[in-house]
Image (cartoon, rainbow, N blue to C red; front, side, top):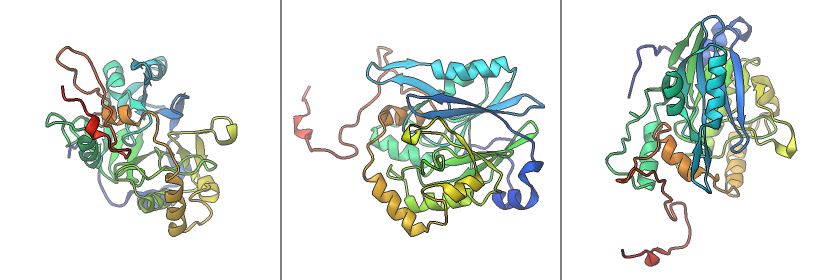
Length: 324
């Protein structure tokens, strides 16, 4: 575990928040969103108005998979905004190891500074996917690629704001939500109320854990602003990314209106069985488990990503492997 001198620890964060504060009493968090239409991903810059300190949440590195071409177009929009607003970047927060886009955290850190942060259960994800991708001993499975890791209830200062880490497993074992002032960044745990919840069929995912995580978040005060990491615009509606806890509790089509845990698990597992793998899952996992860094270059200095054949099922065709 990597610890940081500014991490604060005490008690049950949610109970403290709900009983000691009303949302209207907290400093207003300034939030700017950036949407990557290729992966339906939302990146956020949150900042403290008084000090100008800021954090980036879930930044995107662009990949054209067909050509193997990387681009920093999405990240440059984020860094340009931070510079234009004269903000100082303090943290780059990852809600989890994403399977649908690559992280641009190291590039943003190179441009603006800041520290890359993730939940402490990242080590379990690294163990799982280090094996799937046949990584050698050079790939560390202790989370040391990140500047530091947070456990449930840890808090970071961002000027007059406080970032509170909430462990919300289910989609992955390492998912974290971040409560920044009155704004809650839920990663893939919840989507907009008309767009349901995260899938749970990746290695280490668990539908019952996701239900419990959702209920934990829905216990926050009604006025808490909820920001999602993805919006797939169901029915062709316009982009939406912000709701409230009250709206999610009343209207989320998967976990709202008092659905039982058993009914949710049955629905979630049935739906997951019909879903295709995300188009960028293989490159995303290899990069994101390294905190956004690319795998090591080969002896000639070229970069490659692996495709582990049949790691998730398929026909047994090992007998056709070349003997070279």
